[in-house]
Amino acid sequence: LNMGLGGGIFGGQGYTTFSPETANDATQEVHAQVIRYLIARDKNRPSVVLWSIANEPESQTEASEEYFRPLFDVAREADPQGRPVGFVNVMLAPHGVCRVSQFADVIMLNRYYGWYVNTGDLAGAELAWTEELEGWSSERKPIIITEYGADTMPGLHQLPAQPWSE
Image (cartoon, rainbow, N blue to C red; front, top):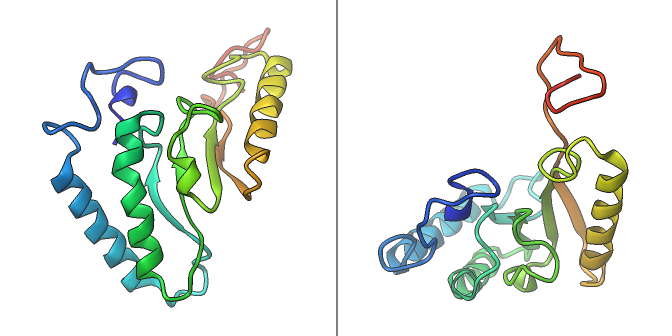
């Protein structure tokens, strides 16, 4: 549900994510059915503490706001225990840009400071990450870091450190 990720984090495929030809009303209805099924299936599992209804979707557009608003309602209506509902936010829609987080009970963030942005600059990454977290904290909602980090190729050692180096 994010055509902006198709060409990599800074590229796109040239498609609109939410449109009659891509993610549309039929998509939204299937998404709602899957949310209902997920909650009906897993509602009694003690390890479930909240529901996530999407991973890194487009969330910075008016169309994404319209698409997701009713899905949060579906999740809340489907859960008799009233667990929190959220979605995993992508770096392309940080605090102040995301239009979907307003519906969430919890802010869930996938972030790769020092990797995709501020590559190799850990001091700059720390500053950017701190600034973003301060922005999200103003929402007065719990924040969960759902992904953070980088990756390496075993045995690759470069000085000065470069991406993929251990």
